[in-house]
Length: 163
Image (cartoon, rainbow, N blue to C red; front, side, top):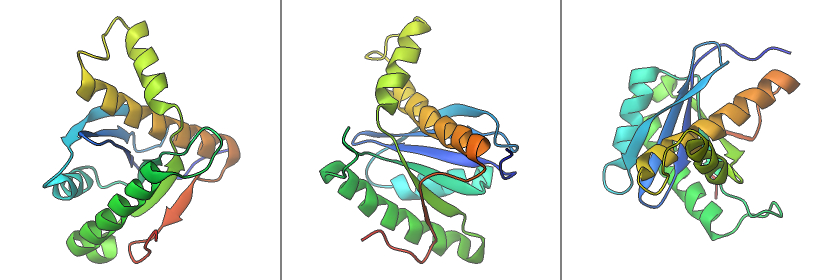
């Protein structure tokens, strides 16, 4: 199976930091970028990254419990995504990329394990773990699309609201 051509931006939205990753233009490889401090200005900084990388879509991790249900953390992320959709539509208008919510279960655990295996202390490099978790989320989405021919998760358009 093949996947759509175009970069994707991956987002792991945390309470203190927002991890960011990006794919190559062919959608084959995801790499960690950096993190955006959460709070004031977060939406503007993410919009700056969208402007810089011009992704086909933004893939945001949606935290679900292990049984697949959505709890308070998912509700918070859905609210953040509403704000992101509005900020992107305000800045890019018709050129706003789609936003896709994908299951992020265990992405941070996997990222921490990957860092430990590489000899890095996750506790000492919290920003690194956030961007690595974003890479994990994006990589899973890319792998799913390559293996099934269908992009995973819930596709949102700039005028959609998650509520």
